[in-house]
Image (cartoon, rainbow, N blue to C red; front, side):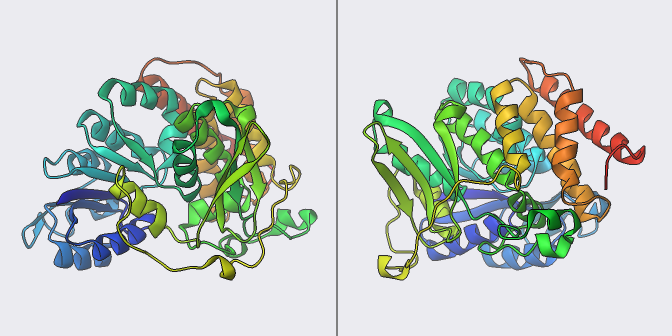
Length: 386
C-alpha cells in the first residue's frame, strides 16, 4: 500500500484527492495532510483515515487544537509542511496548497525521493529553473495534476518529441467571457467567483476570470515539458471537455477529452506509471455535444499577454509576475481594488523590479518579497487606479 501526503486537503484538489483515496482504499493510505484553518474537515478525515501527522497552517490557530487528536500528531505553521512530506511511510506527495508557499515542501519532497503529484503551479512558475535542476539531480518523478498539464503529459508521453509542433492549453474563459469589456472595471468579487464550469478556491477562480491562471499554466508548461513559449498556445474552450491538444508536424491535432472532474488527473498521478485500474466516471462521447475553440481576446485578458512576456524574459520575471498577481488578487478579494487593476499592478511590478538570474532559492525569495512589498506600497500610496 502506498502512503500519501496531501498538502491543502480542504481545497478543491485536496477534496477530489480524498474521493480517489476512498475509491482505492486497498492501494493508498492517507499518512499526512495539511489544512489552513478548516479544522472540521481535518477532524473528519483524521477519524476516517488515522494519519500520522496533520498540519494547521493558519497562524491565528497555533496550539488551538492541542498537540494530538487521537493517535494523530498535530503541528502548526507553514514551516512544518516539510515534515508531512518527509515521513518514511509517505510515497506520494500531492501538493495542492495555493501560492508560492508550496515551494519549500516541494523541495523537501524532491530531496526525500518522493513521487510528486504537483497541483501547486506557482512552485514551477516562480522557481522553475531551480526546481528543474533539483528534479534532475535527485531523479524525482513529478507528475502534473492540473487537468490541462496532466492531459498534455499523457499525450506527449505517447508521441515522439520530434513529431510535436505545438501544444495547446484550453481555457473556459472564466466568469466574464461574454461580458462587455467596458463593464469589467466595475465587476464585483461575487461575480468573479461565479465560475461557469469548475468549483475552485477564490484565488484561482479570480485568476481564471482574467485568464491569468492560464498564463501561469503557460509558464508551468514551459518548465514541465521543455517547450519554448512560441510552441505553447491557448484557446478558449467554453465546454471544458478538452483539456489539452498537441499539434503534430503534419498539421494533425490529438486531443485529450474527459468530463471536467479532477478525479481523472489525480487518479492518473497517483497510479502513474501504472494505468488507473478501473472506471472513475462514465461519460460517453455522445454526451459531449458541442466542442468549441476560439482564440483569446488580448484586450479582455491582458494578464495572459503579460504572462507570455514574463516567461520569455526568463530569470525571476515569472516570479515577479506570480508574486504581483497573488498580492493584487488578495487586494481585489478584500474589495480594495477593481478587477482590472490586477493586470495593471502586475505590469507595474514587471517594469519596476529588476529581472535577475539567481542560482539559489534565496535569490528567488528575495525577488518574491521585493515584489510583494512593491505592490503593497503602490496600493498604500495610492499609486494604482482602483
